[in-house]
Length: 252
Figure 1 (cartoon, rainbow, N blue to C red):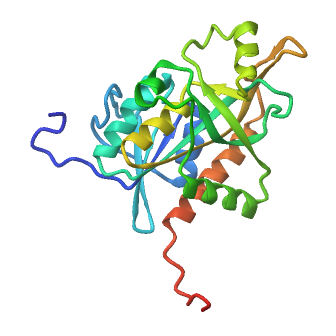
Figure 2 (cartoon, one colour; figure 1 turned 45 degrees about the vertical axis):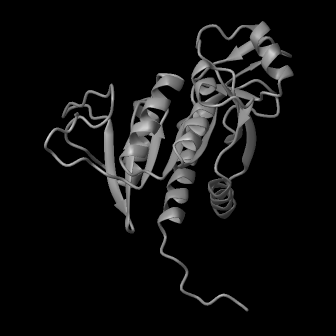
């Protein structure tokens, strides 16, 4: 219904940017992506001055970048469902997370190896207590980080619903469950991708910290260099996914 008589767009890979203008814009600029004209996805009202959806071709793969995905699990679920219907078979989350443990200081680059299901949206898609990324994509992310010399730390990330209700009592409860960091999207991304039969992985860095040992929040203010590393990692993963097959014969 949305596209009427016009052909529906189609892509192979999607990057959901769970960041504001600066973070997502850095990725768009690095890839040289161009805006998609017209409304494409639910709730994202495009204007010529401030588009949400960008696209590019890398090798033979069509890639879509969705900007400013700031509204947590419900928005992530809607976008993954719609993108799966538009041909996407791989979705990469590009974001940040708040650390609850001293082993994940601000700025460290992380990959979500487990998404702990605490929020309502994730639980609508799975009865599991934790969900995981696609195993092959996780290999690709780790190989790219190693090639780029990036120290990439695995993290157990919980999705939370109430941004301004992350109380010390909540933090204690989350830590008792093995949660190391929180954001609003990682578990939902994994659960919905699995339900839709596509591959998903989330990468990012620690943007802020709330450690019970210090009982103080270290805010979101941080150097832009942290984002630059996440951008480089994400671009490297895309290049790896879009590279032509190695023509060299395999040893017998």
